[in-house]
Image (tube, rainbow, N blue to C red):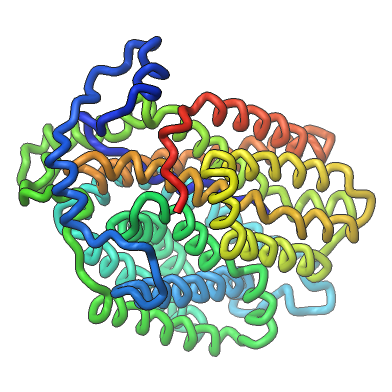
Length: 482
């Protein structure tokens, strides 16, 4: 029901030139050193990229959206199918949840408990690896280009699809699927999509494009109920294989190539490339992480991203538990709420963001998103009946605009720096992986504290804090409206 910002940003110091308003806003803290800029180099770098208002018919864009949609359907199929396959795997090949007692059967709960514990452990390991390897992956994109990162990511997904098909047909262990899924997460789709979009869109259009990306990758509320009815495990495996093949072929053959995301116009390689001394590369990667918090142009925006990420992950971790505890709802009775929430998000991300940005500006949109989070959490906290939650779901879509808004701000700041865009985007994604750990831990601890609505009270207070932090971000750090 909420959307967290994709943490993608960064860039090397020195950064872009700033106008008088921004200088005065930072002068009091003495943080204006390192803001010198070679404007001619920055202009040349901008001209070397194909920046255009995104269109469904522009070169490369049909291929990108095809990859995004097919990959999203694959992720939904695997996510829906794995719990049932895991229950059968951990119960000697027989699904213990398919009997009369269903998921209340002791054998079913035991099998699903093993699966949940295993996925939680592997997810924690993956998040920690993402934190350490994000700058390395981003630096590879700087050196070798975004297309190679795309190909590597889709190849990893295809291998996972092969393992998933082997599991569905009874020939492979579930551990192959789980481990390959976590390896695949080290080449995150959001990072590759973000780099590709930054390379090809002007600053004022990035929020709109990221909103469409968010809509395309959040279709589970609409697609999941249909797939749950139509697909058997074997047919799901065939669909995953077919779509995985199509994604891989599209990425390898049809997706246009690009210069490295951080390549300079003069052809100079970034400083943090393979071939540079190892100590220098490690130092550059650590600087990419530290810069997000130390440099004034990133600090507050990254803090907003961390807040949004923790809220989104935490909200998702207790949403089902809260509705089951308060109203005794099941997955079937929750489906209309989830579908209406997804539809509300799609309306906001596809049709509302552009006119709202023209009217209120990007900063206004982000503020509305956090205010919408306050309204949504208050609705969940005070709703007297499940039917009232349908109204809450219908108006919750504005909260999804925080993601494209903050992502656009950070990527615009980062793209003004020359040579290390990919590395610092990877560093920012690494920081975001911490939110996926902290949010669920915090929300589940609050949920277990005796009052099930306590996580929503905390979320409301945190949204208020986010609005305050946003008010401290200089307005001229936001791109102009398209």
